[in-house]
Length: 287
Image 1 (tube, helix red, strand yellow):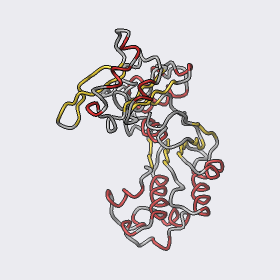
Image 2 (cartoon, rainbow, N blue to C red):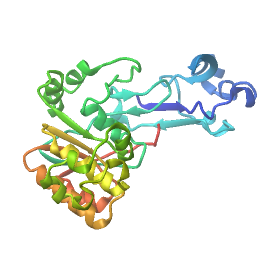
Image 3 (cartoon, helix red, strand yellow):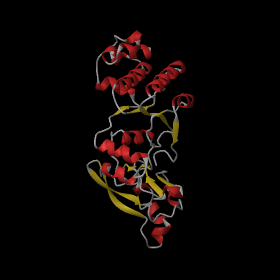
Image 4 (tube, rainbow, N blue to C red):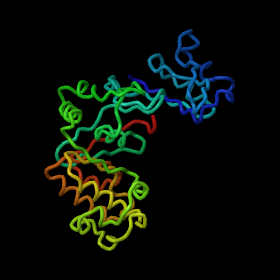
């Protein structure tokens, strides 16, 4: 796949653009071949006729992108070296992720703008979601070791499949924690971890009464307190002041001396301090 063609169906209104304007203007269609076609799409309980772009025949002319009155179409020409199987695709004309970062001993940092697939990559590696290799609706977990044969990821996915590796995932949205759990801070963390994360002043407080920064440190502490082979930490610095960011990063670095860690982080100073290696994600957000 060298070209990604995405339609934002929330913005697409074929009945308001002169009856499928993109279909009528596409030069490939006008030659008598199929590139942008009309196709039924399930939306809720009903099916609606929508345009669909066949990426294999798209020539990347961007006429449909420029002429769509609602800005619903994006065409992204990927670098030639990405002519390979995608790791995951969320649906027809939707988000595509190529390749995965490699977990190694120490801290691996993931850097890139929002919408690039950093969280998706960590959820795939940690087993939170199953990859489909571009064939949306399918579970291709067993194929991951095959397509990564000869690399470090081959043995990693073989171990994950055989449940030889245990993973822990600290989610990005720490505000959800009080909705899925209840209790005081001290019921989740040891006295030592409470001291390290400077949560002594709220140790007896119910987690539903914690601030964003306190929830962030609590979620990180819960993840670090669990025994695992690989730890996936999705953003540790949000809601934290500079001093708390450094302190939390220091605790992660100490914990990663003999374990595998992977962390998404947007604060460059925190990531530079924390990570041994960094993977940079690039592309177009949401595409």
